[in-house]
Amino acid sequence: TDEISEESWTTKRPWSEFKAHFEGWHSAIQAIIDAADKDQCYLWALFNRPPIPEWSTKRVTLLGDPIRVTAEPSNQNLDAYNAYLQAEFYFAQFTLESTTRSIDFYKEAIRLDPGYARAYGGLAWAFCRLGFFSGARGRDAFTQALAAAEQALALSPDVALARSALAYVHMNRDWNLAAADAVLTEAIQRAPKDPTIKNTLANLRSYQLRKEETLQLRRESVAHDPLNVIHQTNLAGD
Image (cartoon, rainbow, N blue to C red; front, top):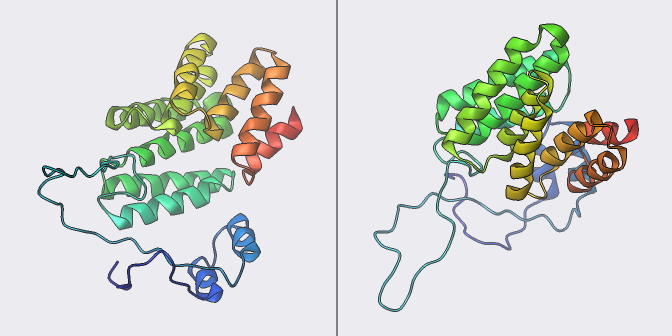
């Protein structure tokens, strides 16, 4: 950041500033902000630093997670991350119009950062959603979802969104439940707490008429993402 120069984990900022930064965001975000302790708001700034020439000396080795294409925000471009957040905002509204707008923003994030694996994963799910809305005419959307999911996984095999989208395509375009099961089995091993994987696996178990497993997976998906309206609705429907 160029606006904040102080480096600290304990710098307090006014709640009103926090609220203003998210003006116009989804009502679920507003609810979280409104529920925050107004006297306990802190600023944790992110700073870009030049790379160090080495990780080790004779006595010390720095340990940590190296930068990867799956990291959030986009490591290459803050504008790409902003476009990704806009896409997520519209995707969460679950309408045909908002889904179409989310696709535009996911594509913009990818244009700004072609290595943004998670944006490809989000795009895959947006096309899955478009296929869902299109019914029998949704095959082309599912095909585009498949391409986006495969590109995400080519960039990084750890993008959970892409694996769950790939399984959804197998289920709803190909009606290949065995292929979907294989994808989700690997996906849940890689990301055992991911709510989208659990919700997609619940969809598969519902197709297979395995009701108790479906309900348990629905409950787990909601537990890991309690503000997700779609997961809540699926649980209520089952």
